[in-house]
Length: 108
Image 1 (cartoon, rainbow, N blue to C red):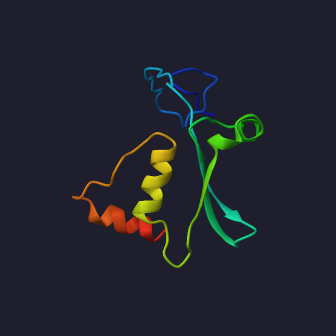
Image 2 (cartoon, rainbow, N blue to C red; image 1 turned 60 degrees about the vertical axis):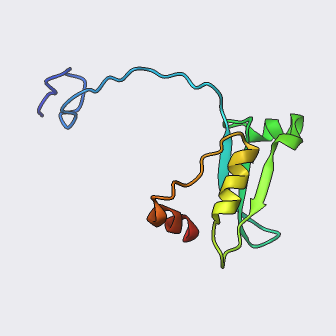
């Protein structure tokens, strides 16, 4: 068995260890795309307050959770994406120089 040149307890398939500066989040948000049973289609659920415990946010601040159904025939439109982004405080318009990226989101 070959030992790692970095440390004997590390597997030999680990050729190097990379170190990066730790960054701290300024705030957590929540965004998911899930299937909605009532509409039998995808829905975006987003919140400017969030992280992993969206259930706690729903119990304490239900007005801070936004949902938007996605028409499966139309896909995610720029209008829907920008509407959700605005509601959670992140307005990032699609750059006009990126039409392939814009059309890719329509196919999701």
